[in-house]
Image 1 (cartoon, one colour):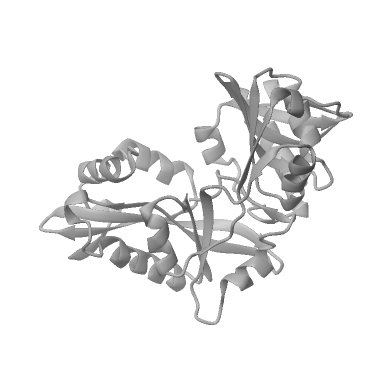
Image 2 (cartoon, helix red, strand yellow):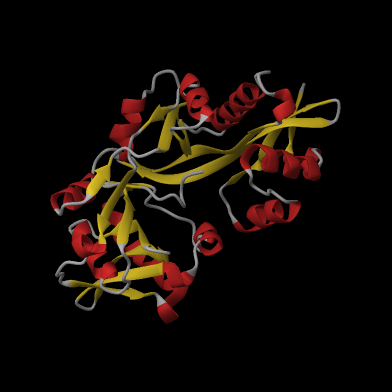
Length: 311
């Protein structure tokens, strides 16, 4: 079994592999777009296990910008972890994860991160490799009448400002946070993955104090809190959005402990942690998961994280 980089394997086999393993179409065109527009992937893009000219598995390797108590610090990120079903149980993913971690260490990174589901088989594999679940994600649910409460805030669509305006809001507010509080601009993943009409800016008087993603799916209004000024109350934010979008039920995805407490206090049903996992692995023997929590403020209101930043 050989380890080869993305440029050295058949991209059609990679597409087949990611469709089989992840139901994700990593076409050559998509790979080229990511590599051209997103500065976060390693030069290798992916590492691949190959045997008899067949791609058995792959792991993508990213360098993710973060902010710690010590300043700017890049961390690793693994993504698109895939094994061909005909070669399951051979340790392919384990070999590729080791290769990815070695390349991260060689690049001077101290931690690796990933996003996954706690209900999946891969979650156990990541735990075996030293990844620690940080238990940051929560999901809250309420009837619209509970969500729709008086608020001093207002929510408005992004409209003419578009992505540039949203990224400016992020830059202005992120200085109070640790974690994923630094982004390359333009932030291509935001522009590729989110419809501008689903971005709602939250205002206090004439000042933008954050933004959320919000859209209606049949009877359900789904709200994903992205960034808020540190003193802004989450229940009021959701109330402002609910005043603009009527639905029978409202579901909110969130991570700050203060936001979780706010919705609980307002009568929401809250699951914390939910099934989504943000995991961190120390890459050096002298470091632990607790070091990552301390450095990046994980588990505190200062930790900023979005599904957009996590691989």
